[in-house]
Length: 74
Image 1 (cartoon, rainbow, N blue to C red):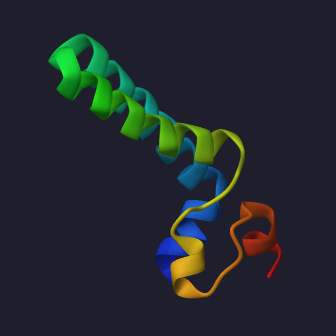
Image 2 (image 1 turned 30 degrees about the horizontal axis):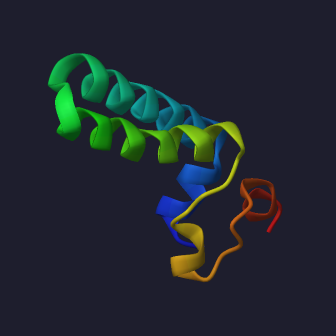
């Protein structure tokens, strides 16, 4: 298994995705503002949702399942 995917499926990887998502949303809405800020905030929602619901969007690119639970099990 790819070490990057293994890390992203771990509890630490989930936490990193959640924090990165929140940081992008805050930066987009509070730091940038305007259309660019809204776009950055929307992009930041992806890692936030992925961390909260335990899926890794990069895993299928490496031949692994989307679910973090299945990645950790196998």
